[in-house]
Image 1 (cartoon, helix red, strand yellow):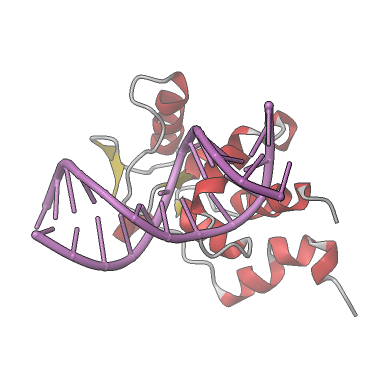
Image 2 (image 1 turned 180 degrees about the vertical axis):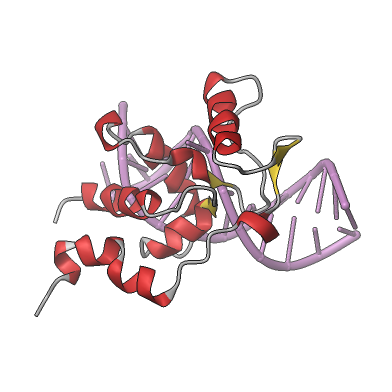
Length: 122
DNA sequence: CGTGTGACTGACC
DNA sequence: AGGTCAGCCACAC
């Protein structure tokens, strides 16, 4: 049980976001078991090992806006990757009503949680 | 251990 | 429908 596990949980849930869909920071935080921990998701993504190849670009604000600073390289990368996946990004925003990721019960049960050793009891 | 700081959010005009 | 504000959690010093 290291404190690092918090980030790892976040990473696992981010990894579960399907291509062409987006999730909010708060949504990821809730999935990771941190109901009000939206603010730690961004930093967690920034600190993620590149080897994980996380789809961090699929995480945006609850309002559908790209949270990365205007003019930053990362922001352009995020927008570009989303567009490549077919997500329409206009004026730095995404239509959450259309692209928001809605995990099914199966995904919640068989997704990242199933990979979590702590959740894999008998 | 207290304090400051984010890739945030929801409430309230 | 959009700007402002205070609360929030984990992490680094």
